[in-house]
Length: 317
Image 1 (cartoon, one colour):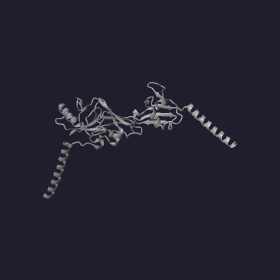
Image 2 (cartoon, rainbow, N blue to C red):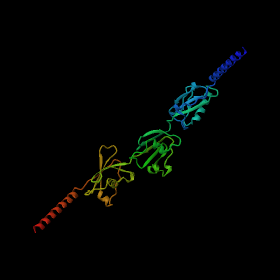
Image 3 (tube, helix red, strand yellow):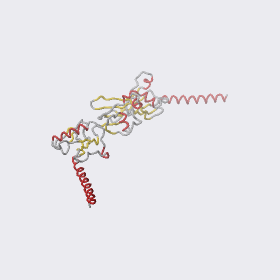
Image 4 (cartoon, rainbow, N blue to C red):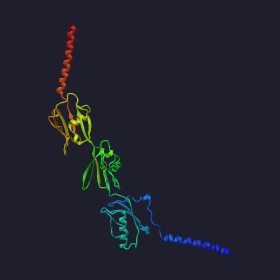
């Protein structure tokens, strides 16, 4: 009888302890753990407009919320009457400010707040121009110019010799592509903080037609080298019987037709005139000389006729 009583007493005591543990577990909730699927905490950057954050309060899961900062960088939580200015704050600074506001508005006596950044939208870097996939991406700690170009898929074959980096209020910087890609000048791999525009201009495109060896589209690497003679040289040079003049056809701003510009080609070759600079999408026409071609043909015919006459005279005599 005593043995049976002891057995039932042990079972009852174990059940009581389990019940007390369950009550204690309900009374003191465990600290919240971020859900990796929703987004583990991103690198700490100063917060700004339209950034997405998740706010968690230890012991109050009903207060957990995910929302975006407003256009002026404020955080409006549903359990607070006043919006919190979050512009420029780091996540840990914002969570301290949220806890302070909760105490001030008597929401909780001593809240423990966690702010998790789900998405940044306040640090855009725009990459455009001669890249594979122009896009706007978000800067992150340690991000540099090569990282932004790699995010855009790299440069295209038409990429010019320089990358232009600009930011509102700062001087525009020009980076040599060759030095950047080859790592010849480490300082050219500029750090990016967000707000930059990275533009990769295309090489200057010019069309050379007419009496040249390889008529068609040519590309000039350096804008300062884009002259008439350089374009003709890239097109393989001139053929025989080239005229004394060439022509540039250029579309002027707000004009519907191309303007014709006469180029004294013979004088340029004789160093009596300057070699004019070209602009993107210019068309250079190198005409042949009908007079030279006709004269050469006449001499050819005369030479053939003379040789035939001499041969006939020799046979006859």
